[in-house]
Amino acid sequence: MNDHLLPRELLPSYLEQSDAVRQRFEKLKAREVILTISQLSKVFQSGEKSTLALKDIDLCTHRREFLCVVGPSGCGKSTLVRILAGLEQHSSGEVLLLGRPVTGPGRDRGMVFQGYTLFPWLTVKKNVMFGLEVNGHGKLDSEREAMQWLELIGLEKFADAYPQQLSGGMKQRVAIVRALANQPRILLMDEPFGALDAQTRCRMQEHLLEIWRKIDITIIFITHDLDEAIYLADRILVLSAHPGEVQELIEVPVPRPRSIAQFVSPEFLATKARLEELIYIGRHAAEEEEEDYPILARMTNVADNVE
Amino acid sequence: MIGIASFVLPVLIWCVVSYVPWVWHPQIMITDPGSVSYLDIGAHLPRADFATELADARQEGRAPPRGVPANPIYLPSPGQVLRAFYTSFTTPPPTKDGQWLHQSLWHSIQIIFWGFVISSLFGVPLGILCGAYASIARLNEPFVEFFRYLPAPAFGALAVAILGIYDGPKIAVIVIGTFFQQVLIIANTTRKLDPALLEAALTLGTRSRQLLTRVVVPGILPDLYRDQRILLGWAWTYLIVAELIGTTSGITWFITQQARYQHFPNVYAAIAMIGILGLGIDMILAAIGRRLFPWDRSLGKSA
Image (cartoon, rainbow over all chains, first blue to last red; front, side, top):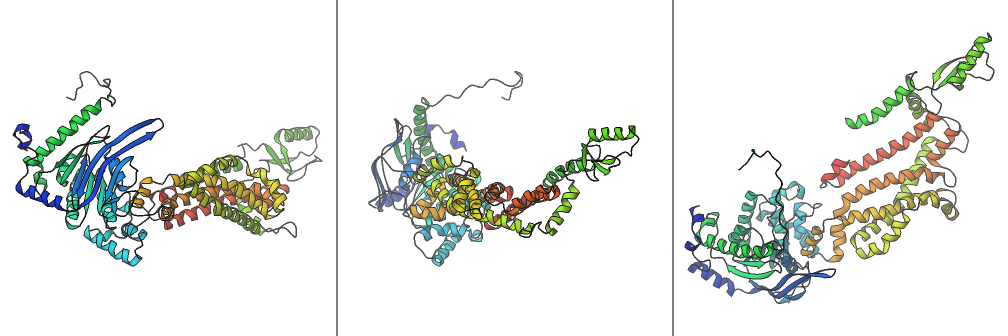
């Protein structure tokens, strides 16, 4: 943990990439483009007042890329992913999935939400079958496929359990394969591990990387946890708040395969330092608008101090 | 355990009032009229009047009347009512064309059943549609909101004019009393469905038309079922008023008949039977609900 004490000047630049990492990025960028976002803006209209939530976002992701989106609260990262999912309409600009404009929700984009959104009235297996069935697959067909997906995540024993009988981590695993069962081109994840405890979250991150390695899927992952972003992502999109604008698109120099041990590697720390810098500056500007926290009146004896 | 106590407690109070002679008992029941000409055996007399008659008789050296402390006849003891539970079923109807108690009860249950079924047939789908689509809600709810304040019995005379004097107007009053509440309650329940579930379904490729059958209806079903149980209780409360409309029928006919002959134990027994029937049906429905919706955690608690 001594690395934490390294002065910032002694860290390598986050822009420095080892040969292996550089080659990976070259290969990644050579792959076909899955999603193109150009000049995307979103204005929220409430009565007379209009708020610019997203401004001129440009981004493109390649097949099998893992992209994380980070930013201070209020930067519109959730709005961005909801627009990509088709749950929200954008005000201007364009979103293209494999060249076709996105106009509404569709099975080509899977989504995992922060809250648990498994259907409580369906068993685990039927939850996974849901997408297949509404898209016209036969019952037997869907059932067989659902079981395969459950085996992939090791939850085949819980096929006939109801979601309420599962732990939070298990629910999110089922939610991930429920989205994947439709074989979408892209998986959108909106802080999917935000409600989990630290230990479970760590295991889920590993689990997600394992799924990502095995399946042809592009992932866009929203998070406010910088460690999580660096650990998972190929590239990290950093947004600023009010309005949400692209601050930087960082190529993570940490080599793959990733492991927990890398959390203290110089590349990791350099990237984190850069992210903190970006988000800290962003937050500083935003803070002026936000309300101050009050200084509390003392409610204990003057001699009774805790620190 | 506490649930049982909630029944035992009022019964206990009733027992004390009925069986402990110095608690209340404002009247004297005559066991021997003595020399007082207008008294009969079994007649009830206020304590003060009895005391004057007794004093008068003693003073004039006539045979004194005798009696025991009693409650007014409109408050029978638990024992009498308990006996009435049995005897009211075995007593033949006072008139030839009258009905036995079980026939009256069955008739009442049929009225409730049809009233509730007809109301639900329209109320449940309309409620779900109002909850699911804002435009339908805006079109319907203001009128429904207005109509539910109109007391259902007020339509009794109108219902008789339109539907005759037999079961039609009775069912109509129950429908009017239930339907408008039903639409609003079910619309509200539908609106409370977690919108994230709808969004999740949309991202899985569900088309908006499928949402209603695939997500909205199954999602609200346990709550809908609970609402229906509450509304059924509501329908029961309209029963007595409904049965007074046109030709009095069912359990109401039995109660009014018995009250006319001052068979108050029977009246109490009949009223208690309505409660027992209502609670019993609700408990059965709750048990069925637990079977139907095994995923619903809150159902077990409310039952």
